[in-house]
Image (tube, rainbow, N blue to C red; front, side, top):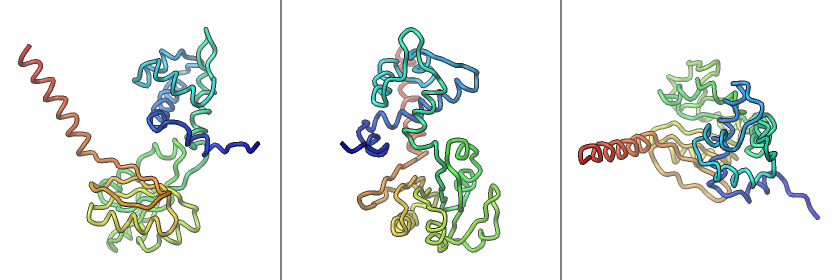
Length: 222
C-alpha cells in the first residue's frame, strides 16, 4: 500500500475547512502568546469565531488531537495545523506591483512570522528600480524568470493595476509559479494546476456597508 503524501491528504479536506485552518492557527498562536497550554474546543472555537461543533468537525479531518476532559494541547495542535497548511517550511514569495499596496504588503511583518519570505519585489516602472522596500531591492519585472529559477518561487502576489494583472499572471504561470494571490480588482484566467486567491478590499467594504445599512434599517423600524 502506497503512503499518501501530505499534499494528497490535504486535497481530501473540504475547501471550507481548509479556509478555516489558518483562522484556527491564528487563534492558537494568540493562545500560545498568552501562555495557554491546553484549551477546550469551546475556548478555541470562541477564539476563532466559529461554533465548537464546526471546529471539532474541521479538526476531525486532520486526526484525533483532543483528549476528553482535558481538551487540546495548544502547542501540538498548532504544529499539526501548521504542518497541514504547509507553513512549517519557508515559502519564498515574489510581489509584483510596488505602488502603495505593494509597499504595504512588502512591509507586512506577518509574512515572515507565518512561514513566508518575500524574496523579490518587481515593478515595470524604471523609476521604482532605485527603491529599497523593507530591505528588498525593487527590480524590473523582466527579472521574474531568473528569480523564480534561483529562489524556487511557487507563490506570486499581484498588486498591480487591473489592466496589467492578467499579463502579469500569464508570465507568472509561464515561468512556473503555481499559486497566485491577486489584489488587483479583476478576475484572472489561468490554466489547470494553478490556484488563484482573490482579495478585493472594496468588495469587503461593500459587504460591510450592506450590513450597516441593514442594521440601520432595523433600528429605524424598531
